Image (cartoon, rainbow, N blue to C red; front, side, top):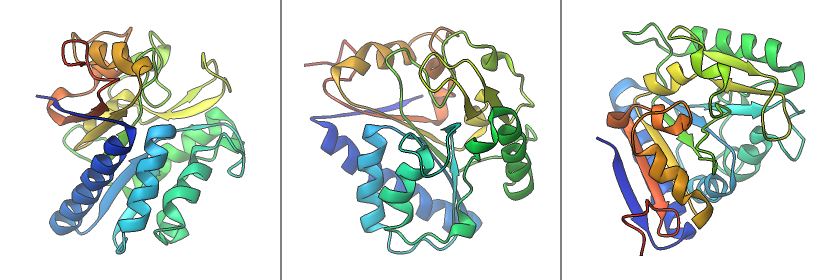
Length: 240
């Protein structure tokens, strides 16, 4: 069953999320000697990363991946890697060799191919023969998209063996992106979904109801999903 936590405001969401990520990283390192963490972009995750970067005094054994990336150079203001580098990777002094960015500047096809190879080569596979990440941090769009998996997009039908996908027609600019597949999101030991603001309330509510291709977030594995939302973004029956 999905674990849902609602908190008063975005800052409280970020504080709780940073603590949750830190706990998962500790548990993964204790159990397996390594913690495979995947990051997303967005305002709520950004504040979470700032808080996590300040408290993550020991990053030994943490390997950083990305849930998706825009096809822009890493120094571009739209780059998820740049956001993570400024808010978390540099403050926590995570060595570059343990940061695995999506090479968006190569274009969606080649970038996705290379990232799939990296994941195959460096992350242990589970029963489904897919790389198993310990924790994937996700935002959610008002339309219910997660990573760069958009409503009714062909990428949702990529199949159980798909790892990393090229996106050439994103409904949000820029149109070209790279994204982890739904299969990889579902294979992760835990997904942490963050939301704040009234504009996300309908999306969160839909994500927690019946699975639907119209709402990609609803296709995540419920038993492996933690949702942290502020009161404004919490599902309609819970909102104050």
